[in-house]
Length: 412
Ligand code: DWN
Ligand code: ZN
Image (cartoon, rainbow, N blue to C red; front, side, top):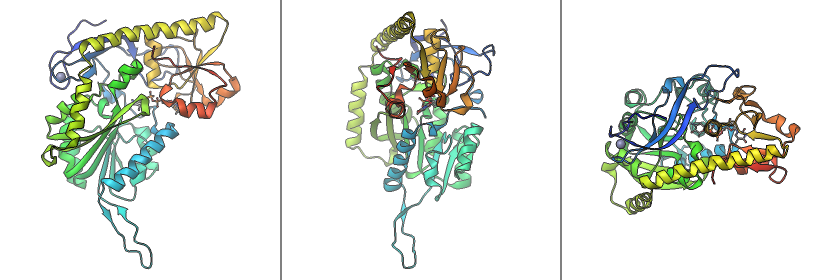
C-alpha cells in the first residue's frame, strides 16, 4: 500500500485514492522464464475532485511499454476488425470530403478524399481502409507498426504530442479527421495530446475518440480494466473538462458494447460549434455521472474485494472436487486479476491464446504458461476461465458455449 499523495496529471490537484489492487507487474510483459526478474508497482486508482478525472497512480515509462515487442494486435479479434471497418465506412460517408472521379464511359461513384490521422494505429486494422487517400498512423511500437506498413499503411514511429502534431501539419497539412481508439487514456500527458489534436484539426475537422467507459466498469465490476497501460478512465464529465482547456468540445456521444463497454466521442473546435441538442445529451450524461460520487467509488472497491473472494471460492471448489481449470485469453486484463487474486499455476496451469508472441511464455507476475489456442480443443478442458470476457460471443461461437463450464472472472 502506498501512503504518498498523488497529484492529478491533468490539473495538479491532490487526488483521492479509492482502490488498491496491490503490487502488479507490467501487464503486457510476458516472461520467457518463470524466474525472470519483473518490475512491479502499486496499482492504486484515484479520483481528482477538481477535474473529475479517474486515473492510476504510478505507472512505468510508456517508452518501456510500447516497445518493438508489444504483444497486442488489434486484428486479434474478428469482431473488432468488423467494428473498425464499420467506423471507417461511416467516416467516409459522413466526415470526409467526397469527389466524383471521371471514369470514361463508367459510373461516377463518389469517393472519399481528404486527410485522416490515427493516433496509436497499431497494426493498421483501421487505417487499412484509407490507403487510397492521404492518411497517417502514429505508432511507437515497432512490431505492430511493421504489420501496418505491410498492409500499405503509412506510419510514423512516434508517440503523439503537440510537437508531433506540429510536424504533421508542416509536412502533410491539417487533418479532416483524427481518430484514436483505445489510446487516449494510455497517454500520460493529456494536455499536450489535446493541444496537439486541436492544432492538427482543420477548421471544421473532427476528432473521433473511443475508449472503455467508467460507467461500464462500475456496473460490471470489471476492475481488470485497471492496469498500467490504462492511465485514465473515461467519463463524459472529465473528458469535457479536459477539452475545454484546448478550445475543443463534444458534439455527439455514442456507446458500444466492445471491450467491455466503450464510449465514442465526436469532437470539434468549440469555436465552430453551436449550442445544439448535442449539448443537452452531454449535460444529461454528466448528470447521470454525478452519481459516481466518491462514496460510489468506495463502494465499488468493496465490490471488487467481493469479486475476488467469489472467483477464488469458485476455483478452489472446483479443485476440491478434483476438477481441472484452464484459462482462455492471456489479455492485459488477466494480469490484474491473476496478481490481485494471487492465482498461480496450482489453480490455473495454462492459459490458451491466439497471439504467437505470447506462446510458451509466462503470464506477468505468475508461473502460468501461455499455450497456443490450437491446443485448446485437443486438451478438451471442462472448466475454463474466460479472461477475455469482453470477446465472449466471438469465443463461444468458435469454441462452443454448451461444451464447457465457462467461468467469468469479474463481477459479483
Ligand atoms: O486498450 C487495450 C485493449 C484494447 O487491448 C490495450 N491496452 C491492450 C489490449 O488489452 P487486452 O489484452 O486486455 O485485450 P483483449 O482484446 O481483451 O485480449 C487480447 C488477447 O486475447 C490477445 O492476446 C489475443 C487473445 N484472443 C484470443 O486468444 N482468442 C482474442 C480473441 C478475440 C480470441 O478469440
Ligand atoms: Zn484533476
